[in-house]
Image (cartoon, rainbow, N blue to C red; front, side):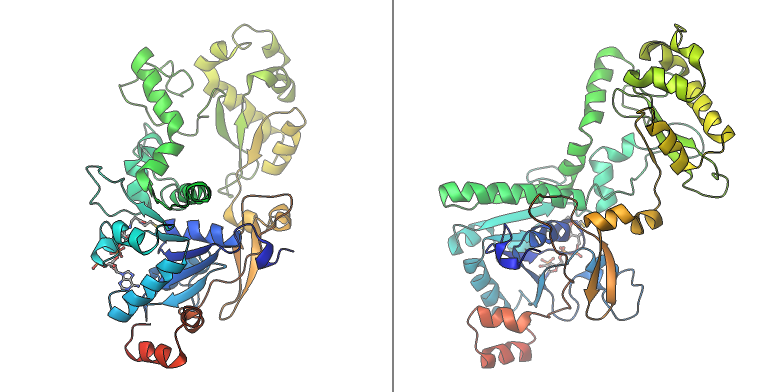
Amino acid sequence: MNTQQNLPLAGVKIIDFTHVQAGPACTQMLAWFGADVIKIERPGSGDVTRTQLRDIPDVDALYFTMLNSNKRSLTLNTKTPEGKEVLTKLIKESDVMVENFGPGALDRMGFTWDYIQELNPRMILASVKGFSEGHHYEHLRAYENVAQCAGGAASTTGWWKGENAGPTISAAALGDSNTGMHLAIGILTAYIGRQKTGKGQKVACSMQDAVLNLCRVKMRDQLRLDKVGYLEEYPQYPHEPFTDVVPRGGNAGGGGQPGWILKCHGWESDPNAYIYFTVQDLVWTPICEAIGRPEWKTDPAYTTPKARQPHIMAIFGAIENFILSTGKDKYAAVEYFSGFEIPCAPVMSMKELLHDKSLRQSGSIVEVPHKTRGSYWTVGCPIKFSTLRPKVTASPLLGEHTDKVLAELGYSSEQIAAMHAANAV
Ligand code: COA
């Protein structure tokens, strides 16, 4: 087990001036790796997620606990003179400050980048905003789905025809947590840079950019479409017309290998009785064997990806029929097809993931004791190391570490009491 002292980021002090999801996801990960993350929250209320979507009255909501583990909480009203003084001291002593306020909020508080640099030239200031600096939407405030729409995910996700046609939001936090992960890479890069130059710098990642970065292959498709006028791996090809923009492709595989979601035994009552099946060219012969269609191994209408594409949906239909007629549930289907080296996986529900033995064993799903909740399950560190296994500890109660952090900054107990009296902390 790692102790806090021997973790890679031990000794790195981070002012966590973040809220909701994008910023907290970033600082939580850095806290797992050993950084001392001090979350600054407004006295009395704190991060809005403490009270959002509560499952137990009067205790911190899972929304908060699952994004703020391993941190310390300092309540501070940074709009009071005392609060500004404490923040100033913290900036002088810290390595990184992370924030995801609305545009201009930090400047309005009096902590411009110029001023922060003056206070501590080694400071790395890391920001999440909806849009990047200088962008014509720079002034817009943003949440997850705003970013998914602005970054190209919504226009390329979902169905292109039928009742449910239209831009579609992904359940994955492409705008929020994804931006936080990008920012963490930026912070660590600036930190390594600082070891060479002795100077900090400003690091920013916009939610739009982070989404766009994950939609890189859709931009690839736009460029191809501009050139050739069609996209052969989309289900529209070759029977339906393409316009001049990348269409939504339903559940099609986004790369060079066609794929689709197929029904398995029990689909009538279980909303997740499905597998994802990929028709990888390399294993076409095993696929034919697996589904009892040996004649397709040599039939010119089936032997190449190009030949298969015009009737790829019929091929998926045949595979689905095979699964259903042999009574395979999603696990049995995956077990069976994996014997033929076919890339596939069951569609997993959140319930199944929560109880998955392998995920619990690897630390991807962990149970964390908490002072007022009893304990909570959360998603642990997705990055695995050979000699480091981050230990997830509880999220802090609001202001749990206020007095301790102030004492570490050199304030006497009288001064701390006075700050409490002035409602600055
Ligand atoms: N003490 C005193 N004031 C504080 C404070 C503290 N500890 N913490 C925050 N505040 C103030 C800010 O200074 C700001 O004041 P101002 O607007 O008068 O200058 C005010 O609280 C509101 O901050 P803001 O970040 O704008 O919160 P919001 O609830 O109005 O907006 C968002 C929320 C998410 C829309 C906005 O923060 C945003 O667009 N952030 C960037 C993108 C982002 O991260 N989105 C969320 C992804 S999960």
